[in-house]
Image 1 (cartoon, rainbow, N blue to C red):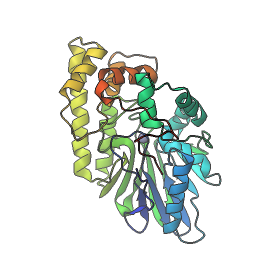
Image 2: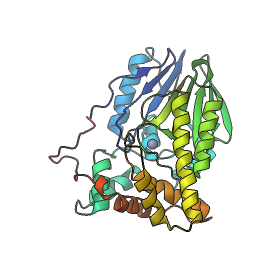
Image 3: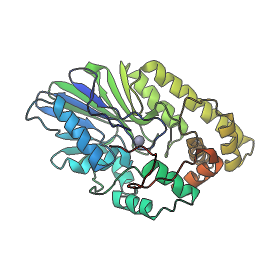
Image 4: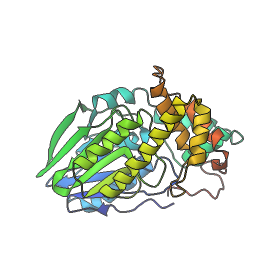
Length: 333
Ligand SMILES: [Zn+2]
């Protein structure tokens, strides 16, 4: 696995860092928006080495002396926010709801400790090691935004208008999207996944569909998903159809009295999209949607839900991997 050495040019002002590796967790896209002496980064990578690689790539397209002075975090998950602390001079902007969510996210050191305790004999641990063992979370701290907003915030970056639009709750409680009207670009964060079955933690799925409709209403030329390659409006519409199908089926199963395990199993059996990686995430989506249908007040139990997803899709458990051990698992280097 080779992370991209360079940014992908969308136009003179907008470049994307696209570590596109279907079937993996944590390799999220970032977008550099620059004009004049201003530079804004949408999302930061999961680890310090990945952030260093992104920063080096950004400096190859920025004019000499121009630094990233603004970081926008689309949501609080670590694969989009952990690297923010490596931009100490930057203003970090996100929504009020994302700031609240950040307080309940595991810190990088907690995540590292969890991985270090994993036993390869346990299916859940094996899954974590396979998908997250490649990452080194040392040298990072949770970094709260220095500026927050609700609903909408309009920024000026050099000569560019940049609009931050809150669309959560959808993937998480406080998702925002970033619109650069003059470029016809929308950064969707994790309201949009391309190439993998999506995972959504807050929901409901109708919120994800509404967020995507907000993206389409902006009539974008290019949409940057949270994970996966650049797409256009057609792909966003297809994704919405897929999410709507999952919504409809989970509501039908719920109304028929199917328990969550049975519904997840049925949805996995019915899955007809071999082109999408990580099908076990369907069980997470079902759990999230059932939580809303049951008006459950308690938060989604991530470990429990992911464990049941792994149990229901045993064929997805992969060879154990530990950083620094001999393995066929690709590295991020
Ligand atoms: Zn993500």
